[in-house]
Length: 108
Length: 111
Image 1 (tube, rainbow over the protein chains, first blue to last red):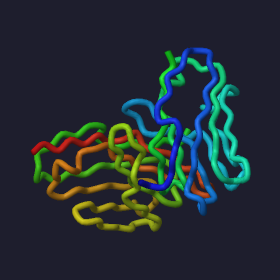
Image 2: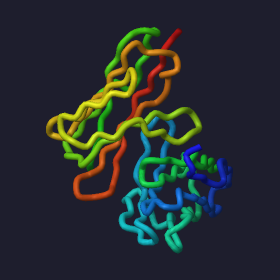
Image 3: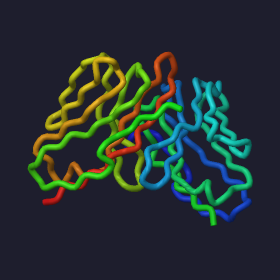
């Protein structure tokens, strides 16, 4: 157990629906990262936070994606109007040292 | 586009053999990390190397950071079935806190 939790672990949704994932990092870690990983590939950087400030967003993150980290604690990643291409494992990391178990999204 | 290429992509070896995995880029990194990932789980950090030319050993695993801080290698001595997994390198782009991951090496060690 790395101390980073993600919820839910699995999400199956229909195309066009909105989904939201939550990450609870290790409490004393200021930096929080979101990555997306498809089968057989390494994780792709999506965005990261320093406390509550979102410092960088990848071009992979279209307008349908939004991430927040209110009060610099937990973070949420929302995907609006999901597409089949959004199917992937979404990973959260606490200061890149500790990764959560991921949320596997399947868009039907 | 910053890329970290790993080679080989797949490796299947017998127990007891040695192997080396390479991680190469044209970008300079402030630090480089190696992870191992099991199916359905997040990556687990193995080591962080920071100084060009640095060598770190973790039991049967030896990690090296290139002098120019653009490449790295992971050497496993006398591989065991428990070493099976996906090995990932990740580099911190200089001057940022942004990390990019390599393409991964899937290792299978046969008993």
